[in-house]
Length: 465
Image 1 (spheres, one colour):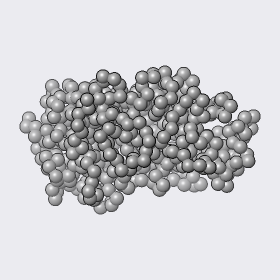
Image 2 (tube, rainbow, N blue to C red):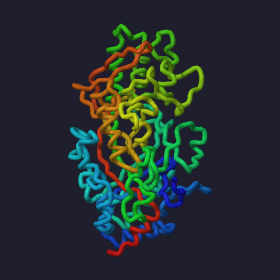
Image 3 (tube, one colour):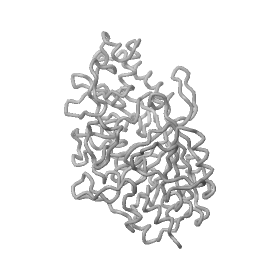
Image 4 (cartoon, one colour):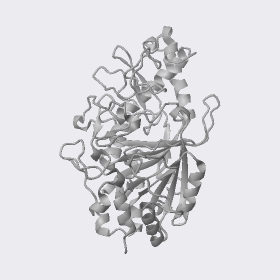
């Protein structure tokens, strides 16, 4: 039996997204334990003129001007005075932190923690990540000022939604998210996807794996209704991506199977005003991702970015004759009900994905080298069984399908041009292998945080040692 969910005890943005235009993530150090505890006590009790209120997971009757939430690192729990015997009950990957887990995540070379800027270069000082979401810049500034009165602010990262809900690679993003038992989300009212058990995202509830409930840290007041977040600063090489599409299209122009990829008589269905070279670029981009850049799933419309009839963006599956490559980013991150080697793992590694872009706009016609990318939060009840398993086993090793084992995700993977490869799918079941993928996404920082319940925040604020 699943326990009755109390949404008022869950921090917001876990089970339902906020859908705000701006975010500011503040990275905090606890330098005055008493002041930090008092801040948390006021924040969880409704806030004040000088302390923002913790936003809960309940449906709003009136939309608040901003939303405010916190996550604590292992060092942060310790800095607030959590008892050593309770700290020992947290999972090892959280205790070690993202920096020490770097190799498992593919964070080496230019993505290694040695290259991460402040404050991620001193992970033991990052105690709390406080996040404020709003549509108004002034709200971010106000909350930063309030937070700074109780904590030392080591750094901050601002994010924003790009036009048309896209990322810098040009894809519409944020389309598919888990739906949860006992949770009504008006934004997902028409979505037809499997319902995930609460244990996918929250501690103390059954998971999709029969008989498995992830361990709840002690005491129950601290661990129950909590979650974990793998926060990542991911720089996206938008110019490098467009350059690679040019390179791939150049190679495909002379390939004997070129017309199986692109029908010369239906180029407008791939994109308005495209020639064959331009259409080949978009097909490569669509197969790499698993969606066309407008969000249409390649599985449901493999021959056209603009299908003749409306298709669902979320209600689809993969079968043995799928046209969507097994190595695509979409299938690696969520193989849905398709056949995989670890058959029992279907739907068990689902993650809640929250994120906004950072950096200046990108113009493909006038590329530049400015840093831009994604501030991503990957939320689940178990970092090792969900986030790390996806990143290591599926994104970077391809262990769930023997046809892609040894190849990395073409977008997110830790690729090197010398060894990378990706198989484009053809309508007749054949493939065309592409080589020479550069690394398109570079990690620029991150942290594993625990997202405590409201009860847990109150518990932490009341510690006396």
